[in-house]
Length: 290
Image (tube, rainbow, N blue to C red; front, side, top):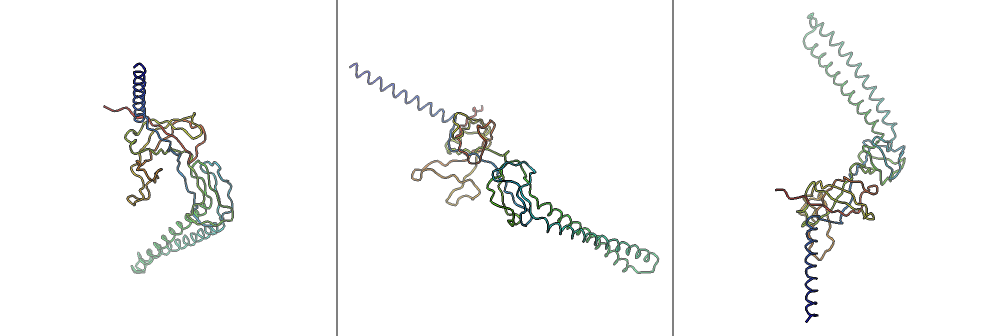
């Protein structure tokens, strides 16, 4: 009898402990939504020239940190120097033509006032002067365009960051608008954490989070929830391709979809940040507002 009672007591204790553990796990699930499906992200600036031509120098190397304003590469400026010289010569010609037109207009005005010429001659001189003035404006614009194109032969870093995937060499002919380099914006790193749709109701903007990098479990750092995605890409064609695509992990079980949650880094990561680093994220729920 005693043995039987002891068995019932042990069973009851196990059940109570299981219930308590379940409640604690559920409370933690609600208070601190957690996912190990997180990635480090950053903005990537595609570097493309604004003019075409052969590259004559690339004073940088792959994976090199750069500062805003550093020279990334230079296109042969010879053609553009000639274009500036030609545009400057054309401007001089049009300015000389404007002087002649103004002088002729002055003469025609005096002759018209003394009744020597008729109104038609005066109007023709006025039209010629206006045309010459317009030609000067056009020549000035062409010269400015030529000067800008000459400046565009040198391509500089638009932001501080890190160059990656450099696969070009001096002598390569590049076209305007053709992206050649990828520059990771060093000031734009953020965390993308993918949470199940059943967890989103426990996540709010402004909530604090703890982020852990793979291989650095003992060195977490802080972050803050910035926003929750309003949509993901669905393969059945129901959404546009610009939305983020989050693949399921198991095909034969109906799983809740996962939505990206964007977090701003506020703490100090243990290692330099790189796009694609694997992260675990735990979000602390904000207290309910009365």
